[in-house]
Image (cartoon, rainbow over all chains, first blue to last red; front, side, top):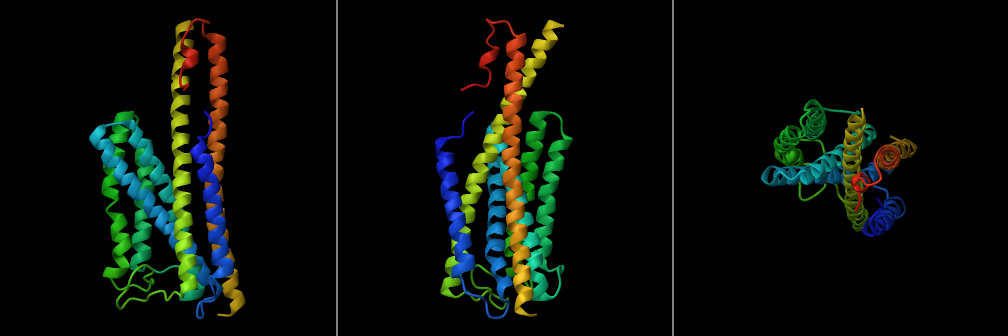
Length: 235
Length: 62
């Protein structure tokens, strides 16, 4: 199975977008006056959170599509979305903790945003455990789809938590009211939105690669089943 | 907090970000490589055990 030409193009565009985002963060965005160099972690920290949530949104939408159509293809989309979402939310949480130490003087605090993000990550970790615990493929897909839809409730809660409750986590997107906000200069905004765009490309590219992997695994499983049939027939 | 401290934490932060992303790309690459080898091995075994007029050789192609 060859890599589709469109994916090769996307690989190139994604690498270019990533390189531009890195250059914007390190060479274009100015140093923030109070936090210093560690503030630069925030560009990719937020972009990773955006990518993670994008993965969970895709998983929820495709899980609903699976429940409506019962087409196993949508289950592959859902698994891929959850996997990428988990990886990028892990990056988001850990990089946030590293940013927090020199800024808040602590690696971790049970602030509402940190807590809801951690619960969200654990909910989607359990998605993988649920899948491993069900042998029948049709039941596994159905249970996982329902779970992904229920688990998705944690995503908007995490997003709006700092706007609804008292939090020390800064509001980055939109006005935060009385909450702490990130005061971006125009050059910082370019680096910030450049990072978001680059990570959006990274998401689509990784998602496509992960889908190909899932399709390939299905082909190998089919070949294995056929091989066992042939072997069984010869005995 | 002095500036060198914040620089150190910036590099630790980006080390984690690039490191985890790199590991995930490696996982996809390694998974693809492993499946490619398994598919080639299964096709070879099927070709050995399968009669020549069987349609098994076409499974999964296309």
